[in-house]
Image (cartoon, rainbow, N blue to C red; front, side, top):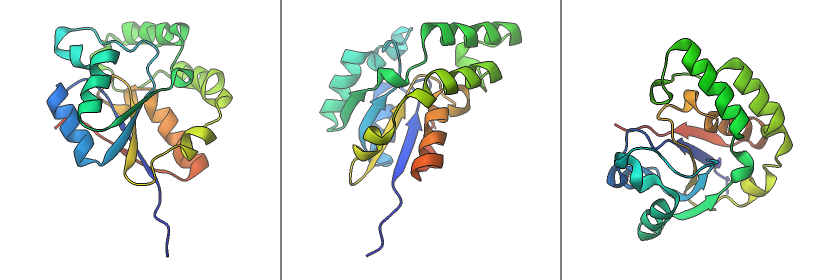
Length: 165
């Protein structure tokens, strides 16, 4: 019997409402959400559903497990480094299209290189997929893409990025 390649998806909060978010996760066969945010809140009333407690309730109702992985979250200092680059380029967090090179380098060395992803990989669901969750709409503008890339390169996972329609 041939073993299928394990998959992971990434998803952001921006662009979804609670209902469309759950629908997107169900369509992708997500069984567990791996929240990689440091602060599990999102500004703006339209995203109140994505604040930690409400998100966990929403996922529980949909029978999707939830895990918080703060060890994969960027530090406040790293987030401010990215915000400074956003300001320099005149883009807002919600309209950013890519991560600053210095942010990528420092996130990789200060966070990603120090975290053993083995336990996360071994804890992935045997059927369905896990979703790396953060807030940015586009994975290229978010550290979750760096985590996903590392999972693909070092653990052979197939990666797909979910986006709002």
